[in-house]
Image 1 (tube, chains in turn orange, brown):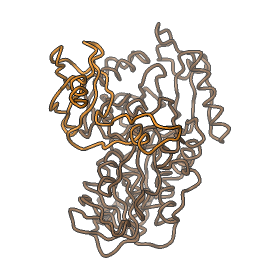
Image 2: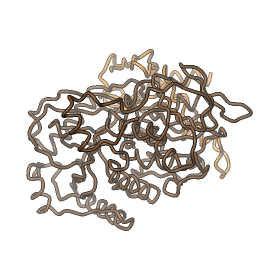
Image 3: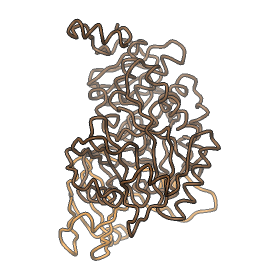
Length: 92
Length: 418
């Protein structure tokens, strides 16, 4: 499996660190009581058997956070975006 | 129906050209309404069906399996059994499993080649010795055997380790002599045959495609072989737990990850025990056929593909070379991958689900094989009596919401690090 970093080009897996599901969103800070929202964010995942949007960090490269879309059945990489761009688009 | 296997049946068949052996279990088709349907014909599902039939009230039980028996993780693991845990939620459970392993072959009348050859965790630093001493003490407080070996004792036992490794010098080991290996396929076959003899219908090539609910209660499963009604449904499909639970609208604290394992060419007896490297992730034993069976970390990213990638293979082999350089010239003949339910705290779930009459056995991470007997025993108890068995009471689904995590490794909600 190789990932094409938008900044550095195609690189081997050993350059990257995995940080899991990119679709979970950190809830706003609430009160002192734990909420279902926080439990879902920290612990629960869709874990789909197919396309998965996930965070990778280019640790031995440009140090960018990436949002990779990957087919979990075949490991085929369907798309790579800079996480920065994804965040800007989300807040626009 | 088959008779018991014994030395006499082997001799009898030897004299008549092995013409009298019969299939070890019936190839059943779904018939009528079942009291319990177990989804998943792996080790845990088959053990559950067997202990339901053996330990509890009379009931009609079916096991439905999407492929053939033993095609999942029960036939893809590295066959190690042990109960060298640290935390109170785990210790009694895994020790029950060890006790059930010790009586398994007599109980199921099936040779599973249970071999208590000893599990050694190698120690490489002062801090690690303290941690293993603490673990050994926790085990002994729970009545489990544990022995801390100093350098001289370890050298006498395993003269071939790289004791003078500059980065990872060896100081000793924690030994659990009752740990060892079991022939994994035979576990599935033995439980299947024993369950079948108690009347359990084992239905292969029957993939569950939906879970039917009425008024919030599970009433049956849609399968590739038609609808099967059941009063209670137990899910034991680790690797695919999230997918199957999603059919009932349930989301789990689980990610699926690929774990690879490796076998070398066969060689003469060389490694007598199960040995784990303490400065990285590498463990090894030798099969009775002579192959070195070893493994290490999961690949570390979500996967439903039963294969991994090369960086993990390199990492595992580096661990092996740091511990015992003598294996460096052994050729690898096979490697394969399996799919693991990685939970957010590294511990499993045996609990009722949010849907009534639907029960959950999931989240075994990469430690499910050793748990097979106790998992079946406790899941059967939960399904039959609607209350958890005392040794699996901590494996609740709501422990994540309540902060009652059982995190042996202490790394938090990072499923790829457990």
